[in-house]
Image (cartoon, rainbow, N blue to C red; front, side, top):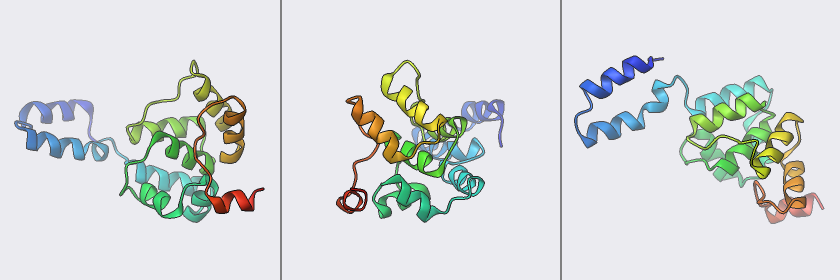
Length: 153
């Protein structure tokens, strides 16, 4: 992992045009030591979850979720939160995932974020989190597929 001073020296000395800046920005996750993809793989192992288990529990369409976990699709904040909750991540782990994926942090002063923080700290499922969000008139983390609705009705 490179230090902030190393990165600052590189920015000041070798990034001299927009093309070089684009290359630098594409590789910034690598400079931070972990990409979201690499870190999430570590988290799944740490929590004893397989990729199919996490994908199913997230209620995100399977192929789309696989692409996000694999790093080939940009991951939205809601989808990231659903995947982290499905994996059983702790609040600090979720915060790191948000940072690594360039998504905004959770803020306890925002009602919706407070509900999500509550859910994470209590180990609630995506469905349970969505239920609380719905009861409070908030945007859901994920919309359920028709097959999910039939299975859980």
